[in-house]
Length: 528
Image (cartoon, rainbow, N blue to C red; front, side, top):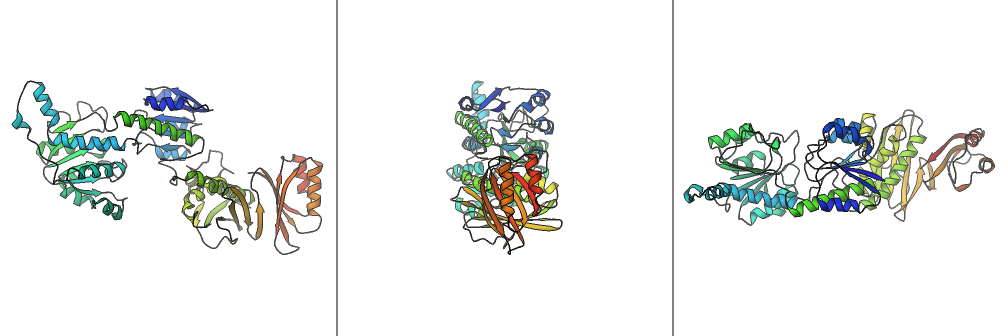
């Protein structure tokens, strides 16, 4: 039974979805004091939040069971993602669920601030009729600068085109080809600032983007620009923006988000007549609230069940639409990593991976992550999973590289992994038979066909007559049945390598007797 804590308000549709799951136990505790959250978080496998709950290092340190933090929304600046990653906790959000709502809200803000809608409404409500005081400007023909061309930024661009606006955008992570396909000019930030009549922010919050709108960048803007911020409050130096609004350098601003929410009386923007203020309404539509709640619930449940990890922000790879087809390869890779750890004569220091077959070459990152997980969980006491395996490998001095020519078997879809350790190296290759059944087909110079599942006896012995018989007799005497026996050898009379699938785990007495066989060089019992 998975225990899930919902610590912020979540839409009814999401709560109803949780209530339908038979393997989920849900507690709804909103408005928890921070200390109380720390006290109880150790009892939960997943935490679903919005923007109110602060998931900092102290919370994550106390979260001994926690596997997933699900943010119903886009922004994750209230989560210590690095600490979560080091603890092996998946952090996920719902970037698509409120994209349409936020894009429409952006256009509404642009229109409202351009036509003085809120101020004109208040004037008429007071019984006034001052039409000449509220002369606005049109969007048509103006240059709109979009900072951040992700999902929301692109939807804003599409809608702004219907207003006959000219679109320029800045996003260092978007290719010029995508810009051309959308009919958008991708430009440097400096050019966007100097060219735009309107600037709208749709970038994520990071150390690089914090205070990106500041005294210097404001000085580069076209005089009389209108600024729109429906993204994150910390993108703007609010004091610098207030100075520019007071001086007329910036004609007006529409602000939906603030550095501190709700903004206090000392916020320099509050009370300025040329600022349209909104209380963080970007995602506040019935449709967005429904979709964001249902999507985060479904994502968290799938992650807990190891079915899918979509929209994870800290996975070392991006789970695609066909993640279920990727999982069998990752399971095989993890078994390869487990075998490497158990068979290595010293701590592993390097990992090289080669993938053969066009359909799996794109899976390098998830497969490499799974190999590392298999190696690391052999000797680390803390939880190792797909989230923290690369970070833990780096911390323990294990290098990872892509290689060529290390896998010799001719299979359509082959994973080959060579590890290096003090005094030697070893290569293990595996394939999926029928796309689902994992098999180990190579261990260094030994070519084999091994089922890497269940209890497996791995034995290296001198290639002499009678060894198989003696080992089989010992296992039979201790009532351990053999499922499969796969053997590979190099030159006749040298050494042979055996993988023996067993139906039950041998007793300590049986293992000691097996190791006492004179011809046995090394023997390990693994559970894969």
